[in-house]
Structures are given as C-alpha cells and as structure tokens.
Image (cartoon, rainbow over all chains, first blue to last red; front, side, top):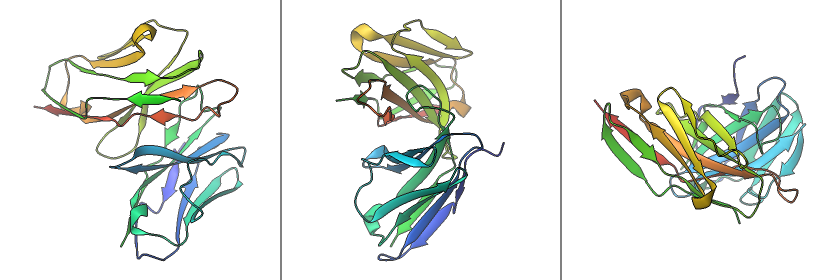
Length: 115
Length: 117
C-alpha cells in the first residue's frame, strides 16, 4: 500500500486566499484525522471522521476552517480566507479502527505558508 | 482533563549512550491508552508503541524499551546504545477510552533528541 497520501506537499499563498489541502487515506481504513503542527501549539487534532462522518471537530479553530470527506478515499481541509497565523504543517492520518487503541498512520504533511 | 507532559524539550547525547525520554500523563479515566510516535527529520510521524492502562509490563523491542508506571503516571522511553539515526522528535500521546470521550489522541509537546557521532 502507498500509505497516506497528501497534496500538495508545500503551499505558499497570500493572506485572504482560499487554501485546499487533500488527503487520501490507506485503503480499508475507516478513520481519518486532520492535525496541525506548529512550534507554539505543538501537534493538535483538528477533526476526525469515521466512515466519512465527522465525529469530533472540537479542534477546528474557527469558521474559516472546514473539512469534508465525500467518500472513503478522499478528504479535504479548506481554509477560507487564509491568514498568516494559519501557517503550519498539516498532517492527515488514518487508522483501521477507533483512535482509542489503534495505530494511526500519518501522511508526509503539507507545509502551508500564508504571507 | 487529559494532559501529556514531556518536560525535556531537547536532549543531546553522543552515539552509544543510553537515553531516557520522560512522559507524564494526567487522566481521570481508568481505561486509557498510551502511545509513542517518532518524527524523523523527514517529517512523517511513525508509530512506535501502544500500551493500555491495564498492562504495566515493561516492553523491549531491540534497543527500545518502555517503562509504564501507573503509580507515577509515567510512560518513559529508553533507547539503549543510541545511534545517529535515532535523532528525531519523539511524541508521547494519550487516549481515553471512557464512553464520554471520542478517544482522540492528545500529544505531548515532544522531545527533540540529537545523537551526535
């Protein structure tokens, strides 16, 4: 299996622009997670899905952020409008079963820079 | 509330030295899981180990070993005879299994380990 695939790997955009990050989980995994990593806040969960349904979105910072999972093999994280403080590495991860006791497989991340 | 503390921000050792990374957690649940992940310079997080709250047996995997002590709420990670390839950021994480929880992982701030040749 190719592992979790994320695109783009790097994104540089200007403040106010819309940004869309993409993720393809490992085939057969029922759970998908979006994380954000910054120096100040560390690694924090934004949202996660089970069978394409959002389960916990309490980590989504504000209404500018939205995430969708239209099918089992694709998810997007959108920021509109983007701000410089959104600059971070965004990771997508997937797991076979519940996050409580199952290993999560992480993608390579998308490094977002908002100027 | 659940919380994971990795008090060591950075550790630097010379190759072949043993090194222990500390992890202290807080939880009110009696059933929970603890994890360690490694983030090498390439950036991708890699799973190392999972331990449930009912299993306090220490575990050894090659040069890696883990010491879980509920009495001190700690889950420490030791690398024996460290190698340059061990240089990475290491994260400890906690997941609560209680019915009121969604089971999401809470990560510590990470410990950056540098192993010098």
